[in-house]
Length: 338
Image 1 (cartoon, one colour):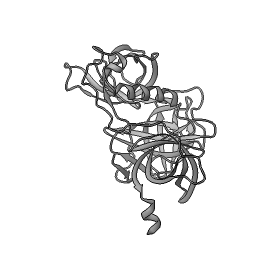
Image 2 (spheres, rainbow, N blue to C red):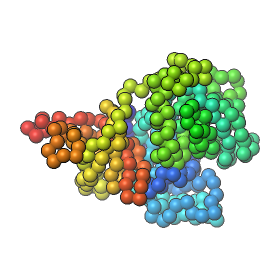
Image 3 (cartoon, helix red, strand yellow):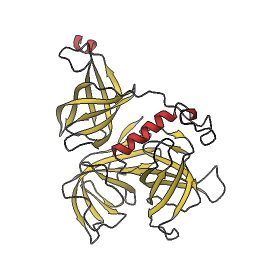
Image 4 (cartoon, rainbow, N blue to C red):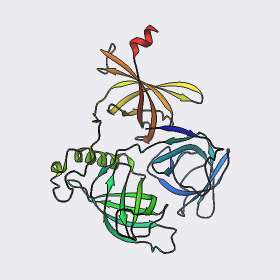
């Protein structure tokens, strides 16, 4: 995955971008918004939906995400003010550079999961709300899905999706349209749309990941012959292992090195999910040192990894989970002898 930092002045965050904004304190309340003004000091957003109560508090740290498929851009800031009768105008102080990831952080699998869709918010003049329709997914990951439809969906429209997942109860998730283009492979008049999940939360994300991991074993694992045709799965190359190791993560905080104790939740050859009591920043580089076996005073093996933080979740009042893509494995024997 390629990662780059977007220069704010060339051209930087642009007016008219449709983005999502979520609190860094909880990932469950994520909103769609449009950038109405941008400067190096402040970004102004117009939330898509009115609210009787303010969805954010002054000083609250937030993360903003912009899709320009296949790249995704993130930046972070703090709420300066919320105004308007319906709490829809939000001012944000820019605290970090814009981090652009060159591809999705989740692997997508081709499948035909049945879904029921309800449009919960739209700015379209031709689409009635609520609009209810059924469809089948073309591909899906734990971050979103895509499908073709005759419904005139536009970027920024919000939907409630009910996924009919085999061997699981129907899973209801919210999402917003991040791409809508004429379909190249379907009858004329159909749109190919991509939807990103909104405020998915760790529990639902875990359900999806378990389903997707099992689905890679083949349709036979779920007795899906006919519904999920053989050969439609693009298999993940790296297996994920649920294993708990103890260690430390060294993070950059306000230009200072901050070392925190961490534990692992799962690991693969290309990344891992970790738990700690202080959240790093999205796009931040971290140096992770893990011990095996763990915990012991003198472990048999200690290894270091340098990686980039892709996602942050608040999993309890005091603990945060964060996903890291590994960039480099450090040879400790070479480092100590150098």
